[in-house]
Amino acid sequence: MSRLRDTQILYFSPARDRMDRSFRQKGKKVRPNVTVYTLPPLLLPVEERYSHLFRMDHRRLGRFVAEKAARHRFSAPLLWVTSPEHVHLLDHLEYGGLVYDCDREWADLSPDWEGSLAGAADLVFAASPQLRDRLSPCSANIALLPNGVNYPLFSGQDTALRPDPLPHITGPVLGRVGTLWEDLDLSPLLFAALERPDWTFVLLGREEDNPLLHRLHRLPNVIFPGPCPLSEVPDWLYRCDVLVDVLRLDRPYDDVIPSRLYEYLSTGKPVVSMLWPDQVELFPDVVYSAHSEEEFLQCCQHAMGEAHDFVFQRRRTHASAAAWSDRAGQVARILATTGLL
Image 1 (cartoon, rainbow, N blue to C red):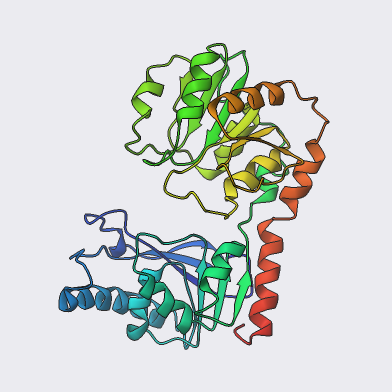
Image 2: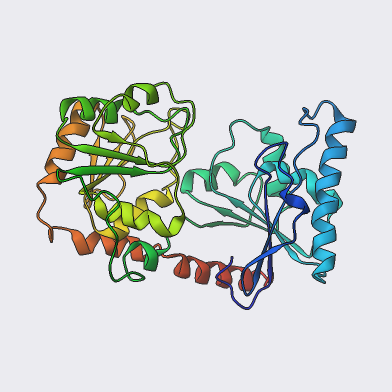
């Protein structure tokens, strides 16, 4: 949405935790047309069955959003929501149109919330065919909108000379970017790191309480730089010889293509990805796919020996087709067609 430059946008970010007080700060203008606020934390994170307390907390959030919108002189704005939880704000806000942007399956939330939200929305964007099919009984106006990528940033168009984040490493480097979720299956990476101590593995991102992290931390050939600003992520990707992705155990039927994969493809570098047994391969012409730890290691070895120009440009072509600038154009056309913009 931020790429719709003729549109003024107020973006509301959730609080980090119950002690987050950044909602008291002024809005931050991150682009000429985008101002960012932090929402107040939920004071009473209770279940819906405690109806009075539940409604009171969401009424407070709705009032916060309404006050900021009024301060910016917004009148009947287009409300763009991304979580089924936001259905509880609708009664506390005035808006001229409603868009539900669904980029994942919300198995941990009540399906009634999402059904009500999709039914109330003037337009639903779904990030995959599976999500579109699941929401189709709730809405007759669903558009497919896959994830995208900041192609100029990750393809190197924005940077002439990149710093080396690993100046003392001389051997092959394999990397993954993104949060190390509690349910992330790190066993293929552990297996490969044990089998190939001459390779360096870089796991860039925030760490959760994953059961295999303590074993990976003990290995001298595994590096954990932690999270870093988005602008620095390409430096790490370009330092790697092979880029890898693994599975989240709580999403065995997820057909959403993560932005991470498009970021990898933007570099043109070899990509190795784990798949579920019956999962359809993503970009089979440019991504090495594995179904076991042994296959993962073999694919990494094959990727390591790949000729530089083998499918370099083809990977970038796939990524450029998913550029956020193009996605924004699709969104603008759909919103205009439906009379929402």
